[in-house]
Image 1 (cartoon, helix red, strand yellow):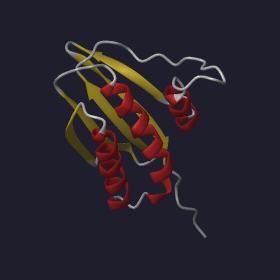
Image 2 (cartoon, rainbow, N blue to C red):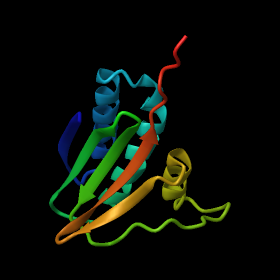
Image 3 (tube, one colour):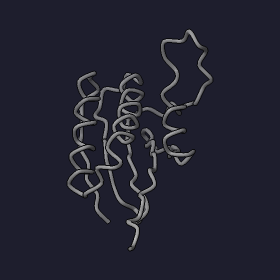
Image 4 (cartoon, rainbow, N blue to C red):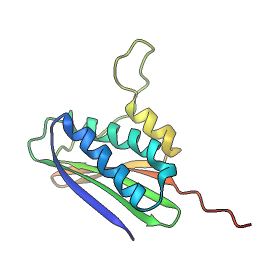
Length: 131
């Protein structure tokens, strides 16, 4: 099972670093078809992690648990659980998890840990068609 992870500080520039990391791994694995959705997902999850105010490091990971799935994970030191809200039309934030939910077709979740949590989001991998 291919897996890669990266430790990042809780700084705004870490969102771009997380995005570059995930995109590079997907391209290395030949999954250019997932780059756009994965970029949005990891950006949202890393942004949420930064907003927790933790002082440790966040962990960004990408793995292939099965041939049909790519999983993006962001772990942080906060036990505050993410909540998907219905943002109003004039809201300037609050749409991130709804986008993650839409892009993953509801295949995302959170695992509480003794000293934090890990949020994961799964993207379906299309299988090549045989001719």
